[in-house]
Amino acid sequence: MDERFGQRVGVVALHVVVISGALLTVAPIAFMIFSSFNTTTEIFTLPPWLPPAEWSFKNYETLLTKWPFPYWYINSIIYAGVVTVFVLFFCSLAGFAFAKYNFRAKNALFIILIGSTMIPFQLILIPLFILMSRIDWINHPASMIIPWMAPAFGIFLMRQYIQAVPSELMESARIHGASEFRIYARIIDPMVRTGLTTLAILTFLGSWNSYIWPLMVLRGNRVITLPVGIATMRSQATAAQVPYGEMMAAASMVSVPVILLFLMLQRYFISGLTIGAVKG
Amino acid sequence: MFQAAVARGREAREGGGFHQHRLAPYAFISPFYLLFGFFFLAPSLIALVLSLFRWDGINDPRFVFARNYGRLVSDKVFAQAATNTAVYAIASLFIVIPLALVLAVLLNAKSLRFSSVWRAMYFTPIVTSTVAITLVFQILYDRDVGLLNAPLIYLGLEPIHWLGDRSWVKVAIIILITWRSTGLLSIYFLAGLQSIPEELYEAASIDGASTLQKLFRITIPMLRPIILFVSIIVLLSSIQIFDEIQILTNGSGGPANASMSVVQYLYVRGFTRLRLGFASAVGTVLFATVFILSLIQLQWYGVFRKED
Image (tube, rainbow over all chains, first blue to last red; front, side, top):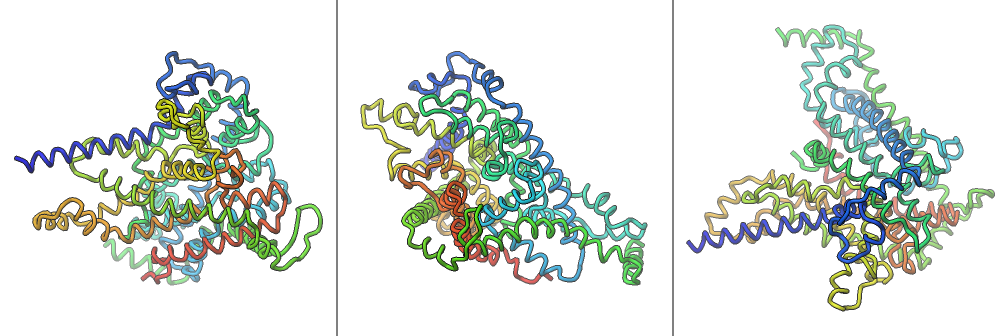
């Protein structure tokens, strides 16, 4: 009897700890969303984070009229979308080659691939920026897309998924005279939809949230991306008149869609993060 | 019959009629090597060379050999930035990792109901834009009206100057890091927990082991490889921390450089003050650090082991 009581206390305690931690984790996000429907003065009224007494869309209105917010949004969607399409193509193609072919210097090339992840972005920040200005890619969409089209981690990820596809399928396609590219397009790609979805999510998200690179290469109010735009709202304001309400509206519009996307596609996201991390 | 067909296919290939088969993999991997060579490898080499020069990006670069590095070593602000970065790394290692481990164990408990709901809540910070959420934290940290000081003000105590005090600003950043990465790291631990055989716990229960004993005697030892893996991820990402501090301190790394990280130092020297050679030297030092840590990580991955 006592033991069972102890167990029940343990279960209750477990739930209390887990749930309060979970609430604490989403609290800043809730604060952000609630604040976006509040005026700036109300955000700073104590207790500040409760749902607004009156839900007002004024911040959103101002955001759309006073700031080039729609441009930022469209820019971010285009950059992230285009990068994702290229990444899916190039990474699955290269992942296919590493998973299913034996070719000369394969091991050496693979070590270069993995080794490339050791170059911290900050090392090349300055020379890459200089390169961009030399080839006139500052403020050019190419700088946001072309260097990022074939990340090593994506190739590694796709290689892991493609390795699991039975090689016999390829062999029989070859006998029927399929070209290597056709094998990739018709047999491999449809078999690794999970991997492609995972890679798409991780890539889109990485591009959507990236800050330092677009901050450096994009100039001008209408060509920047969302994160840079929101940071600009903050840095352009005078200390006394930071448009907090509008900033929170913008922050909500950046975050809420990807959070919803994440909730729907969680399992892909998690498999992408853990693949390779747990050795089989 | 199928096997016979496969064998025939092999014959045909080895007969030399399949040049396409030989060349295809090179064609498939070439985009990566072209992009990597042009946009990453070449700039890296340029950075290494540039670190030996003095250059403002406008006038001709002047060769100064190792003087940039000499200056770096004696620069007080760099020492401060390196110390701060080390503080972030150590805090991440000793606060975030244990928290994430405990969180994973709790989320993995069989008696936990609606576990997928709580998991989803813990994982949301991973996908939230750093810029967006850092601006939220900036409001929460406000000295006079921020939510975090609300209880202190309510009790009539002195409010904390989160972003204006040399020590508290580091605490503020560590809280933000903890908020952002605990859920992410717990995903790795959760994946690791799945691989621990259930029988170990059953056997321990029969021997009358307590929950804590199971944690320290079974879970943690079994997760050791994952803990190492996660530690290196954490070290690598805290060494490269930039966005959070840049936004939270409005680009200053202040007060008085008390929160500045190494990358922010590089950014300011390189882009604000146009000391491109010097900033490249900072980048090279970062690279050396990351390189060594990555080697350890790759060793762990087993990438250098020859595949059979």
